Amino acid sequence: MAGGFSAGICPRCNEHLLLKQGLMFLVCPLCATNLSARESQETLELEYGNPAKVTDNIAKILILEKKYGPHLPYQILLVMRRHFQHNEEIAYLTLKMSGFNSFVLKEYLAGFSRVPKPVPFAEDVLENGLIPRNWELTPLFEQYIKSKTTGIVNERWLGKLREMNASIAAHPPSSIANQLIYTFYIASGGINLLATTIFILFSFIPLTIAVMLGVGMLCVEMAILFRHAKKYGGRLTIPDHERALMVLFMCSIVILVGGTIVGAVITVW
Image (cartoon, rainbow, N blue to C red; front, top):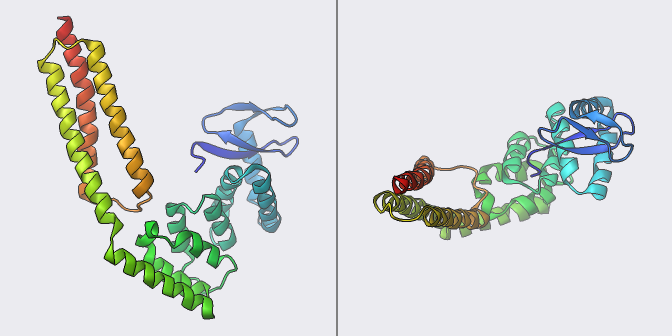
């Protein structure tokens, strides 16, 4: 979420800023002060790394969320998370502002599921996080429910966890996702290698047509990958054999580009 950004504060007017990574200098949109991104980030670090201001800063972040949305508060919370790793409220807000990202969720559960202390936001975490996409976190969820909920609430969520596990056991989503992605990597890699051979052997194909065909194939392949990731994405682990197929597929793309160039050179000669 909000990848490639960080947060800062204007040292003159205290305006909170969302900074693009790599930006060296900027102009504050509120007071028009010229300042460096590093100075802005250091000002924020001093403000939000102060243990005496944790409660006030959390309240300030909630106000910023209402004003700007979650992107800027999320970047500020990442700073606070680094300074106050054992503060569960900060960890929860980081998770919430991330849109309950699976990887942030895993970090949160790993850090706090074994802390036996009921919290008022436990049900929010469970409602947004206890979904089939995060089934790999089942052991952490079970421990979290036992540690963070009591009474009827505890029984209800343990029941939902059992229902989800039973549903996944009957219809495992990972098997379908894996079969599709394995088929894609193998088929696309083979097509890329075949196209490379054609571009080299049939050198009479004009360069513009070869380039258009190559780019078109890559666009189709990227579109298929995007649709697969959108439907089955968010997996927390990737099997070694899938990673190997992915590497071979990426190599076939490089070979396809090289074959297009080689075919063009042969055509010129």
